[in-house]
Amino acid sequence: MKLFKKIGILSLACIMFVATAIFSFGCCGQRDWNEIRLNEVTHSIFYAPLYIAMTEGFFSNQGISVSLTNGGGSNVSMNALLSGSADVILAGPETVVYTQKEGISDAPVVFGQLTTCDGSFIVSKEKIEHFTLDNLKGKSIIGGRPGGMPAMTLNYILETRGYKIGSGEDEVNIRNDVDFNSTASVWAGDSSIDFCALFEPVATTTAKLNENYQVVASLGELSGRIPYTCFAARGSYLANHTAVAEKFITGVLKGYQFIKNNTVEVVATALMKSFEGMTKEEMIVAVEQYKKIGAWSEDMILTQESFDNLMNVLLHAKTIDSASNWADVVDNTIPSRLKPVA
Image (cartoon, rainbow, N blue to C red; front, side, top):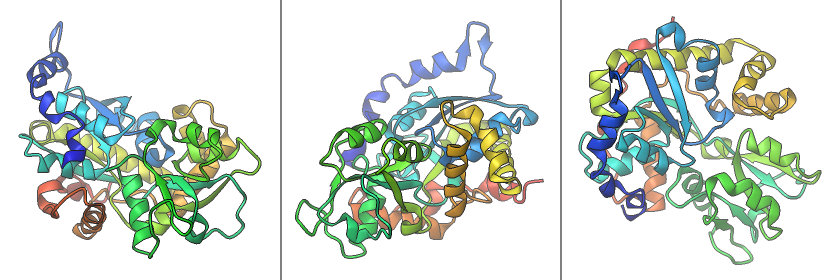
């Protein structure tokens, strides 16, 4: 677990009590636990049900509020959860697996699945009429940081289909040295990098930078069902604030129902409030992309079958030595109780 130790779990122990005290109490005493401090791994239309819940009042109707911060990586989001600066995180479930394997006390658990597959898209610097993975041979692609789901999923997709990773003529050179939030700018500015994997809305907006740029493939369609992004909280938070956590999941589920029951134009209009700088046309394209691949979970239940697929990806990437127990990592109590949402 050397990869995950980089997030500084051990150093967090020294500040845990101080951080918890600071964020749990204000100048007037006990904090309002109906406000959920949520740290998201990144800001993407991939997480549309969450933003719809915020802008359409599905949280406030439940009597709760959500304050949102951006981690810019699952490891940073997990740091926020462990330090006490976040109550809930939206991140890859692999981060929860890594943390539990480190033996952290009061370990985080997944209590709701938001997305069901890889949400990134391959963007090319050249127009490709009929893209296949063969087009990646002898080329470079920015795939994400080591140990993160984007990079591991891309490796898994390629190697299980017989492709070799490397810098040779018949190999795929996956670049894992670029910061997540810098992927688009680094790719656009470096002529030696042919492809990159980007989430929406960045994939769509980046493709518009040059008339030759093109979104050529969905990694979600290639990867199949994997629990890609989930809501996680520490066990004590879920035990002490069960009702609040249930209201939160209820709100997100209502956000999904809104997307399901409305046109992409209506959904795009609602999402505009959460993505300044995007045009409605770009938003519609992004929403259509994610609806097409069935990116969002209908019930937010992370099944054992889907979890086993995740374990296969992690074992293949050698970020873990043995599979974790689904029941130890996942608690489906709340979404199971809420199904179906009224």
